[in-house]
Image (tube, rainbow, N blue to C red; front, side):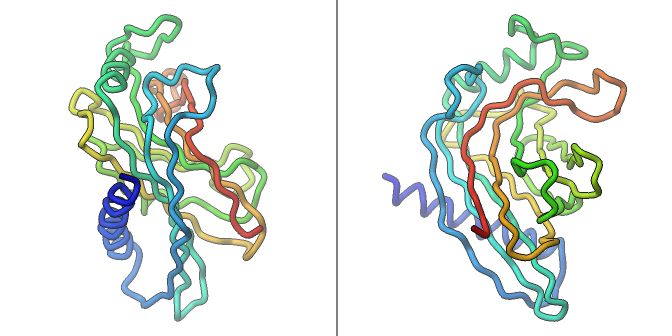
Length: 219
């Protein structure tokens, strides 16, 4: 069964890579794909994980532009929900979760791909190159420590009422410039629920986070 899931991941990853390459440039580049990692349950039992997918895969593609020598990392994730998880997502969306008061009674599900050290200057997320097949996707990148490096990339669905359970598969491909070559960096892949601009910043704010997978590169 794992081999079948991996095959599906490879097929969808190929589609994402074609899309990313179309968005970024037509310049030839050498690429390397890191091995796929699969998780089967969210890792933190002390945080509500009802909205988090129980299974999925994550991987990276590293690319070097042949003409400039610039390097890019493309962390990618593919996942699917069961019916109970879709029901939980709709509960968040329709203000049926005790203790969560999202603005206008709406919470939005999504994925966050970020580095664990907010002060790390190895990579910089690029918002223009984020891709997902979530319904009505909202994209964002954040520089949590205001040091000039975006350490976080996110996608949220603004229409979770259109999301469906497996066999439907969802994807998110992020894009990071490699600023300092071969400096260690650890990425986290998180399921999130976000609030609708409650603080006046005109961007979604994360209210729930569930770690799915982490991966160290360049060590």
